[in-house]
Amino acid sequence: MKITIELNGREADKAIASGSLALLIKDAESTGSAAIAGPKVNTAPAPVATPQAAVAPPVQQQPAPPVQAAPPVQAAPPVQAAPPVQAAPALGFDKEQMLEQIKAVLGPKMMAGKVAEITAIFHQYGAGKLTEVPDEQLPNVLAAAQAIV
Image (cartoon, rainbow, N blue to C red; front, side):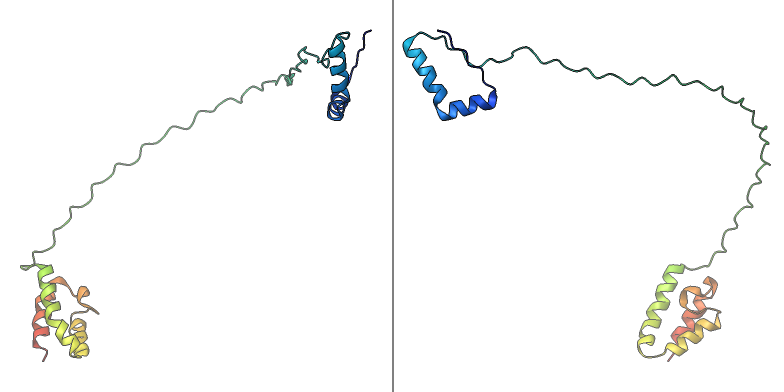
């Protein structure tokens, strides 16, 4: 006697889970009268779809418009040399050192409330603050600052 049972995946799962298929296989094995075959599995490889490349229609080339030559470049007028820089007249003293001396004299006088007198000295030389006083007048500002009592 030959018994062929064909089940799909879901039916086979149900039969195995219920135990009925296992009982049938065990009985057939014990009698040796039935050939037991597992579920039929299609082992042939599934056909693979190859993607078809989309072919665009050929693009017609338009001829490029003719290129016009650029107008000739005119030479720039010659650059004249800058006038020589005149050196500042020598002061006869170190400016930074002079500013430090003036600040040393003015500091205590500012603290003593002599702000109006100090501002008057700066105005006398056309300045609103020490850094605006012309360099050549710094010795005079020092002398005036020392004269504030």
